[in-house]
Image (cartoon, rainbow, N blue to C red):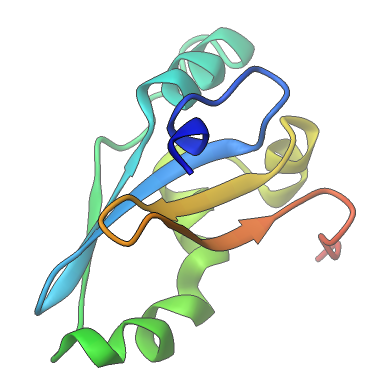
Length: 110
């Protein structure tokens, strides 16, 4: 799974999530941040976003419904813009797993 942390320009944008006891911190991978700034000069993506939960087991229940919003919030892009860049992948390095993917073929327009 370490290849996930070396995304290419053809991969979905990568968001890395650090899951803690009381919440999770989301950050754009540096390579994905560079791709965003190249594609959208002047864009100012957020450095990170923290969403809380009460205990680690709550992570999927509280966070999963908000992952689409998290991608839009962190990047400052719309769903349509994100899909043009290949979608989004959220990866938890501590667990060495992809927790969510939002790819162009699976995206539904709003």
